[in-house]
Structure formats: C-alpha cells, structure tokens
Length: 439
Image 1 (cartoon, rainbow, N blue to C red):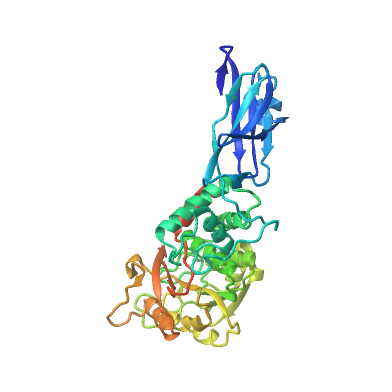
Image 2 (cartoon, helix red, strand yellow):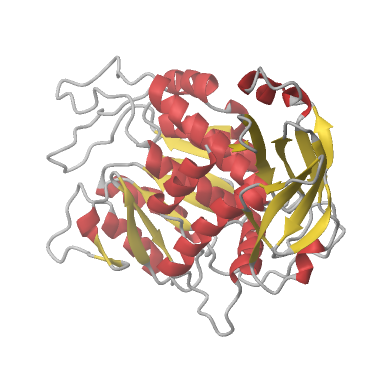
C-alpha cells in the first residue's frame, strides 16, 4: 500500500496468488480502477476481470468504500509459457486509475516449463529416469522437465540433484499449474501421512501396561516419526515405479509402526503383512534382551491398529519368524521393515529376502550412525553379537546374489539395498524440508 497524490487515500495493487493457471489479487484507488493489465516479463498478456467480492479487504480497510469489490482475476491463455526461453519469468499487474494514474504490484515468479496435464491433453512424459530415482515416477518426470536431464548423467541421484529437486518441488507447489499430472497428489499424500504420523506419535498409548521386570519395554512406542516418514515416502516411490507384492513388517510390539504403515498401504493399494510372535522376544544368547520382553498381545495390537490405522490393509501372522516365514504364501514382497532386536530373529526374518523386489530395500531398527560410512556397511570382524541384526541382513543379500550397500536413516534405523538395481531412498533432512514447506 502507499499514499496517492498526497491525499492520504490508500492506493494498492497486491497479488494474492499466481501460478501457471491464473493470477489474482486486489487493487484500490480513490478515483476507481479503469483497468488492470497483466504483464508477463515485459509484455502485457491481457486485461484482468475486476470487481470481485473481497470480504477480507473490506475488513482490512473498513473506511474504503470500494474495498469489498476490489478483487481481480486473470486466467492465462493456453500456451503462454512456451514462448519464453528462460526457466522462469516474473508476473505483475499494472493498474490504471480513472483519470490515467498508473501503479503496479510487486512481481511474482512463475515457471515457464510445461508439465503434463492429468486431463490427458498431452502425452505423458517418457519415463526417463525410471531407474533409481528416490521420487515417485510422475514427480520424477516433473523434476526432469523443471531441472533438465543432462545427457550421460549417472542414474544415481547425487546429493546435489536431490537438494535441487526438493527446492524445485517447494517452488512448483507454489507456482506450477494445478492441473500438473501427479504433483499435487504426491504432496497431498505426504501431508496426509505426516499428519497421521504426528497425530499417532502424540496420542498412541505410549505406556506399556505390562512391562517386564527389567523395564526396557516400559514405553509402548519403539519407532520415531522421522524414520516412518521416510518409509511411507519410499512406499509411494516403489508403487509408482511398478513394484508389486506385499509390505512385510517384522516385529509389531504394540502396533505403532503397524498403524502408520497400514495407513500408507491402504492409500497405495498394498497389503501389510505384520509378523510377530505376540508373545515377546524369543529365547536367545543375548545378555541385553530377555525372552518375553517387548510383548504386545495380538488383541492389543489389533485394537491399536483399529484405533490409529487402517485395519483392512493388515494381515497378522502370529508365531516366531522361524515358523511363519516358511509358510508365508506371498510370492513377491515390495518392501521390508523390521524391528526385531536379535541376530537370530533377523536371520529368520531375512529368509524372506529372495522374494523382495530387487528395486526395493530393507529398513531395519538396531542400527547406529557408526555402522555406515559413505554407503559402506561397517561389518564387525569379531565374533558375531547376538544383539546385532546387520550381519544377517548382509548374509541374506549376498546369499541371494545381490550387491549390498547401507545408509543410516534416523533414530536407530538403517536401510539396506542393492546399489546397482534399487531405487534411492529420500533422506529425512530432505523430506522434512519439503514437509515444512507444504504443511
């Protein structure tokens, strides 16, 4: 706002929203508005419709007679963005008051890249980086168009490329066409799943009503929100790239992660197979863990999933992994998440690995940052520890003829994959930056 002609009357031209579809806002002048031109770059592209109702402006400026009818809107003609050689262009409105005075708004930057429409007027983008992208396929296609695909670029997504992609998604969420294929469905999925994770973390029963004498299991939540957010994001990526099969969870405890993953699986069309003895940990040689610790009765877990998750997406497999994996009927597995605490339990759970899609990965609890250096898993050379789960995971990958790499995620969670064939996993620092921008 500014004062006009020394008369103390507020003269304003303000853009509320601008994207590849339209620009809207409000404008006022004491003598009235004759017309509002929309300028893209340095060229006028049309005249905005003026006079729409703006209750918010009327409340902001109660003494301005025309404030309630000060709104304007302009829908860009189809194809306007293809005429520019730059990746983005500034948009502003230039207002002409009755009597000829000219004033303008601040600029708003709009991308000039053309994106596929979900309405089918254009051919879908080719699946150019289908291989190892950490983003869903349609989002990858959007990013390829926005950022460009360098010829000969490695299929690996570098840290720089990932950071550029997050910044681009934040920018496109603000200014890309709302008709863009897949972009806003992806952002809505992230927003909805983070809301679920955050709500469950706040309200899930955090106290174990039946802890053991040692008390290590007095908390009813064993997994943090950040690592679950990474997992549900990766499930969306896997689904979009055509990875089929069921999602397998080994170790439910009270059902916190089961509830969250069930929501994601329900949204994506996966079945979540939840494996647990529901009698606590098995007997082992561990000096840290005891038989029966971390017990969540199946009735308790079912009740928690019904309250906080999507029970229709879940199938429970009761029994120790040594018994249930061998008779598990599914032929293909889309992803694995396990929180099993013990080497023997990890070894039994990893019998599932030959069924895991080679493009996917294993997420596992019981990992620490020092277990990984630059994608290399730091395996212990001494006698194996009954409390370590990493070695059985590595054994399973190599025994199935797969290369294996690993990375620390967050909390106590790591990820293991075949670096030559698996899709990348988006790390929490990138995902949380995107979350903060869209929520």
